[in-house]
Amino acid sequence: MADTQPTGVGVSAPDFDGLVERLAAHRTIGTAPRAELEWLAAHGHLRFFAVGDAIGHKDERIDEMIVVLTGRISIFFTRGGARHKFLEWGAGDVTGLLPYSRLVASPGDSEVVEATEVLSLPRELMPAMIRECHGLTTILVHVMLDRARVFTSTMLHDEKLKSLGKLAAGLAHELNNPAAAIKRSAKLLPKSVTAMETAARVIGGVGLTSDELDEMTLVRDACVGTPLQLVRSALGEAEWEDALADWLASHGVDAGAAEALAPSPVTLEVLERLAGAVRGEVLEPAVRWVAADCSVRALASEVEQAATRISDLVTAVRGFTQVDATRAPEAVDVAEGLRQTLAVLRGKAREKSIGTSVVVEDGLPAIRGVAAELNQVWSNLIDNALDAVPVGGKVEVMASRGSQTSGGKSLSEAGESKGDRKPTVVVRVIDNGPGIPEEVRGRIFDPFFTTKDVGKGTGLGLDIVRRLVARHDGDLQVESRPGRTEFSVVLPAADGA
Image (cartoon, rainbow, N blue to C red):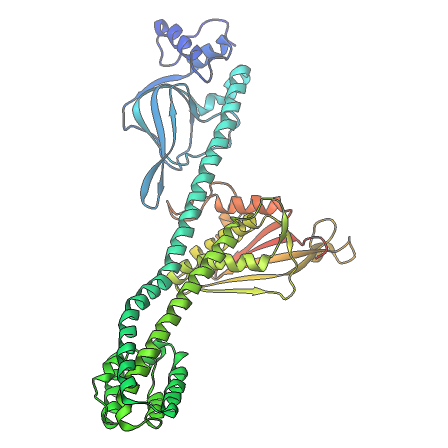
């Protein structure tokens, strides 16, 4: 420490004592020894910034420590084309380069939001500060650790919100089709019921024989299982109605009945059977009754199928999120978790016409873990694969048995004679995307590192995967080349599996 009072860098001698006093009153570093505050005041640069001034930009090298004396500085991230405030520093805070910090580049754009005065210390003086100012360095190391915790916690929160947004978007996409089907069928049902009642009254007036009624019921039952869309897909709607009108006219039935028949599952074969079963004067009301009855049943079946799809989605989401489960480790069915995850992400796959498949080895053992955490692993890996592949690409998920030696190595690494075999479950997520460039492959599990476009990734997805796999005593590996990337997760099977 210098024996004489320095005059500071950019600070005049009369103002030096005042600056030291301001540092002594600083919320973060004020408890440091006065001699060390004098060192900082002597070697720092006093700087002023107006509202809107940029302190730093995303990915720019951080070359100075910043002690905020007055004002406020915010850091902004871009997500989905929109700018979001991430963190903020005000009077009494310290930011920028800190002792022993591994932070090299700015994670976002830092901007002054209130007129600000700071004392900055350049990177080249950091070793000298560490050497000369032990008390101040200790304080700043704690600041760095707290900042890392806050930064990671905030980013994890952002990642969770992003995952929640993906889940909501996927569900909205998946629920839209069955919900629309229910709405469409419910809207058509009253008209079909009215038509059926009208036809029934007419039939009641002509006096059907028991044999004719039995034949009409058999014809009606034959068409119940035929979906409407199968009839319409065979012929265009107009062509189908014309074909019906021609048949009706050839059998002496008012061709106007074709309009009622067209939406129904009735085929020409069904009509021929009906014509051969009833008297000529009964054919027209019989045709209308069969058409209306079949339409009602077909619409009710569509409602049931759509409601079942919605129920299945809800079941898949509940299984995926494990809303009813505790966080205690338990036996987990990997195959079920993989299928639930794909059910949640199916909408995203459809948007890009991506083919997905799940192949699970018969008799796959359970693993011991927390189902919700494992589903997060599968979700992150499959979601990344869906992002990586082009339109029309392919994502494959495979789960099979594996084994390790007692030392934790796979048998292929250790040799079959070494150690006792321990059963494992191996999950592979394979995509046919462009691959991961070799120069960045070693960094993909680092927190905040991403190869996605700006605003499309937090850089925490694979870090979360790595942590969760390690928490389950597993191993995570990646192999990649153009046209094929494979992430493999090896997890120990549950005891007794």
